[in-house]
Length: 311
Image 1 (tube, rainbow, N blue to C red):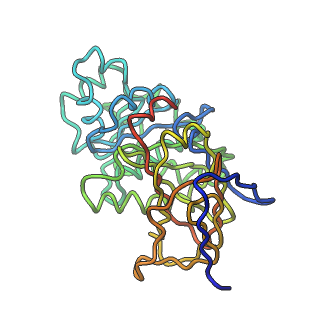
Image 2: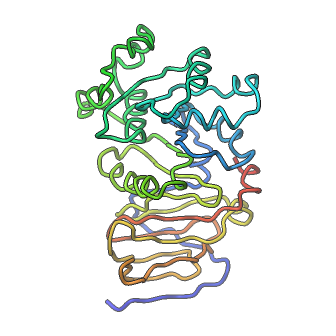
Image 3: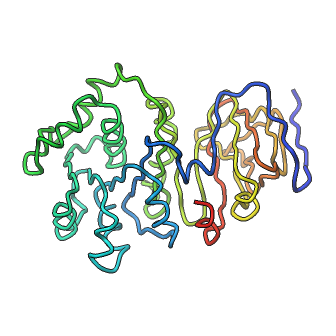
């Protein structure tokens, strides 16, 4: 079929399609409405201002990936404030977390799990940990009966991976809302790895609703099968600016969109060819719809100084 592009007015009412496989609620990414939620901090400076403190209270489990513990510690000016924002876990090969930081969090009851394997990143180790926290039959008991000096009885090389593989096929899962901070910044290779995690996790652990928050963007993967993106009208008006549909997994076709300033049909998109829908905008009053041949990355520009009003 012939490619099509339609320029819409700045505000339209989007009629929801009869069939779609996924609902991605933007407000829900920032304020989950159930206990299966986790906030993961990676090893870059926390640069989202006062939004951070409000986000913290919206998530049930808090994890620092190795040096992410340094970033959490540095965010607060004194120990009294730090003691109010103590993560549940620190995990990784522990080559980046500073001694005084580790000591402080151990004294405040944090479970610190060392995993020295160099065949997975601290990000991947964190994903395994979160899965085990919510779904492994004995994991929480191991933490209660074990101790840091013995790594809670977990193999200190790749024990989390072993536990994950041993039970993964038997789990009955429900979605986990996972918001990751500091995934897109700093070293470029680590940023690219974060993008790969969007794609790989969507195949291996479909129960994750994975999203990245930066000082400028909310970033997620649009899956195949039809995806309805929902949001509050006021949130759209005050917080959402430009968006990009980014084929970072390879060339693909956007079968159709509804609710963008420039809606497309049967639109081939490719980074190699320089054909990418960037600087687009949401114009649907409270939702928009995407139907894609292959998963692609959606970036949504946010107005950070207004975000705290909506979380």
